[in-house]
Image (tube, helix red, strand yellow):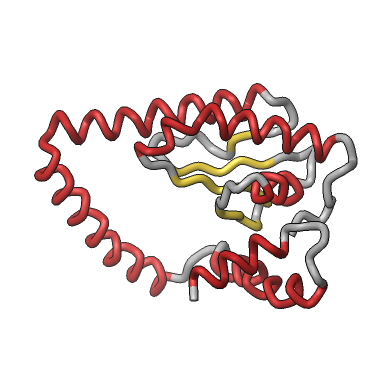
Length: 173
């Protein structure tokens, strides 16, 4: 099901996409409005309990790789985040939200329709997350992203230029 949803979302980003596919995908995007609101106390409790799984997974990886191996992977993620956030900031018109320290961050724009930028990236094969308040693109990095950071930044620069030129779909999604 996730594969079908991915393909539908990818097709919906094309200019030649039939309207019925865009209508089919749109509720999934609207669902993000629910998932990006301030959580209730019950939701926070579940999230905190769920973090235990991530902590256990990190512990297992640490023991598998050893301390030095784990540090190397964490350093690769940190270097990649620093490269991407610097590159995004240098494009002009884009801004990284907050001051990220790990491998998760979002960026957006007060000047450009960021969902249109996202759409251009999707057409180039980049499948990233979206956030709706404020509108932005969400990245979750792993050590594997270090090898493609320069390519992502080049494609992002091209996407920004395309949207700035007015050739991109202003709605984006």
